[in-house]
Length: 264
Image 1 (tube, helix red, strand yellow):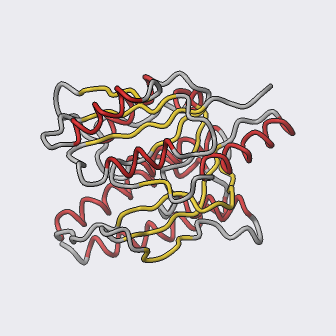
Image 2 (cartoon, rainbow, N blue to C red):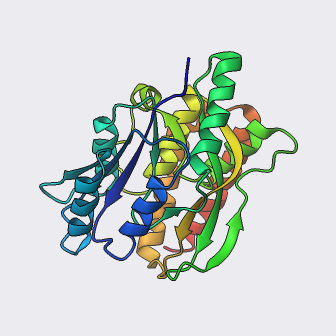
């Protein structure tokens, strides 16, 4: 079998300032992108004009124009369902691929494992946190390959440290149920847990995506809601992992309950 085909999906809402850099970073990738599908969630700024420009210029750039504002999870899900490739990668409109080899590194890791074992896995990279200006803040090493790699990845999933811009098998997304409807907090984290029940995560070793650091804190009410959502996800998926990972999960859940009590 030759190379897997790959689509990239981008949810956009009023990201006039950053959408061009996002799209350019995708088009500059050394691995061929069969289609770039952008779901525009009823933007009211100049990003619509920019997206029109790219869709007219490039045959592989397609835009889905939302009829009403649906939120990022529904936007991503709709775009994923519109793809026709073997693999899909997600990228937010205010972020961008830091390296031109990002997709190539991840797909090379995927193709090697498929050739050796027949398994269709998910591949991820390091990320770089940047300021709004684009200045680098820090590099996030998402996994230390020493020791038990699977356990390290599992625990990072539980603590919601995994990036969302990985390359994943399209068919596995539907097998695991995709994004949960109505979940507006930690929806990426829950999807990661669903994925891990169906396949494995592998580390490409490449610098991947630049995430823009967003200023602003949470109120105690919002923070409490976030913690409660975490607890609910813990309870729902606590049997999905091995005993060692569940121990970490339960210890972290106890810590979160303590934090919630402090907010009441």
